[in-house]
Length: 324
Image: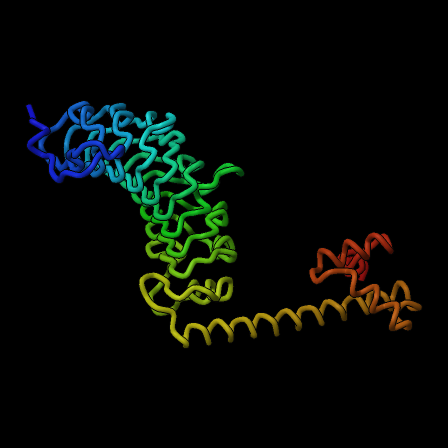
């Protein structure tokens, strides 16, 4: 049987200032099976019980003054106790990595700033819904498939460093709620289409890692880098490499090329509409002001143009082409 007193150190005043108490518990790799062994250490503040065999963590309710708790590499499967009032109310750092937790529940943890849930069995980020002080969150190496969280979730909005690497994420929908994130690791996921990058456009992120996703193709030809800078020019680092001036110039060049292509396509569409109007409403074509007003309200896509033509004339560019 482990004598927990042998692993306690550092004396400090108790929270009420009336006594000197032991505040450090460092018992790593000692085959501890029950967290109850420290239940009597109510004044403990720094607790490290990494690499043991603990399964039940209900005794966390008996540690009201804990500031840092590490229960990494144990055998924990459920942490329902974290959702109870008064549990770890002063805890700033909590490490539950490398366990077997499939459901984080809804932990309150009102002062927690650093949460490590890596290498568990989690499928979503729902667990941080009410953690309003969270700054760093590590959810790497789980089974997360979605970044969607409840509309009233506040936890994701406060995180500044978010590690989601080595999960099963294919869609980035929902990540826009991470409004404070600066460092975002999405490496080793299943993001496969360029269209997913639009979800990063409104973030204040400066460092993004998308390595080892299907979207990343050959080294050297990096359209993803260019696309990200177009969508979010505030990014300064991608895939572990600093953004260079050449990268930014490539993005500017691409923006210009796209604008030129857009204007050319728009002009071509306008000419089609002019030909349509000349055939079906010659008077409108001759009245330049009226035509321009009509054209300006039609939108920039052929689908939108056809909708307005159909509405006004009962036919569109498609039917006209078929008649010819």
